[in-house]
Image 1: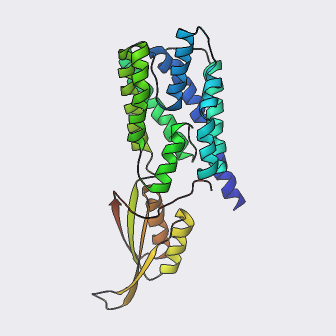
Image 2: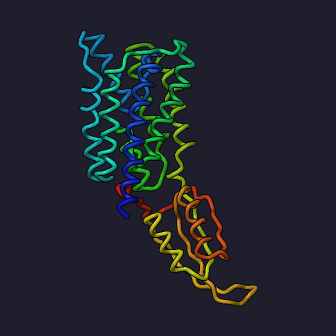
Image 3: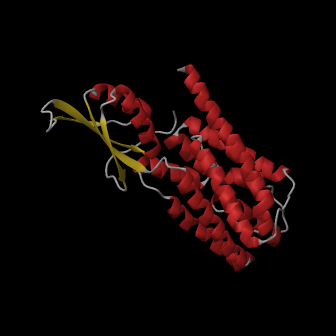
Length: 287
């Protein structure tokens, strides 16, 4: 058990460190070169930096602004999501902020359209890496994780709409061309996250087996979810059998199918894509 825990935590903080480096490099090579605002608290930090520099002549380090902005989301994470998850997210926030201030700017290209597309791809990759490691890049990610876990629906496109508000301010103050290119950046990033990270896509399992207790134990162990047991009779054989019904994430469904086949090679498994559920479906992330 201890070995599994250490492996999980190593993966968590390994993903956190790698994602932080990618986020910082992306800002210094793509985002700043294009004058873009990547959305979330990173984009808000860059916007506030620009406002202070242009209208007050004051340069405030990226780290100072980003850490202050993330204070409230970190509090939400500690209270509602979990300490381990939040601490690893703080690692991403702090390390990416420090590296953004320390790494010298190295623009790869000054073509704003290329920056918008490839910068968005890299940003989405970094965020997906965080989520795969069971952590986040902070800021609006805390809100996205909370609502996805607690209420079972995908709010990434809603986050995109909120980010549009930041871009309106940026457009008014610094020019609409950069704001519009930033929308392409954010949209690309959001789509990459939705494509790479499948945790919040739900699947319904119908498992017909003669070993229901063993199968349920695997469901409970792997997913922290419960299940419903139905007793029935095979229409062809006339023998008694059992059916387990449960809703799990897409990635969990793949693991469960393998485990079910190990427990009962004759089990019949039907997986149905689930677009909406109404009821308590909560998967605590801090494990």
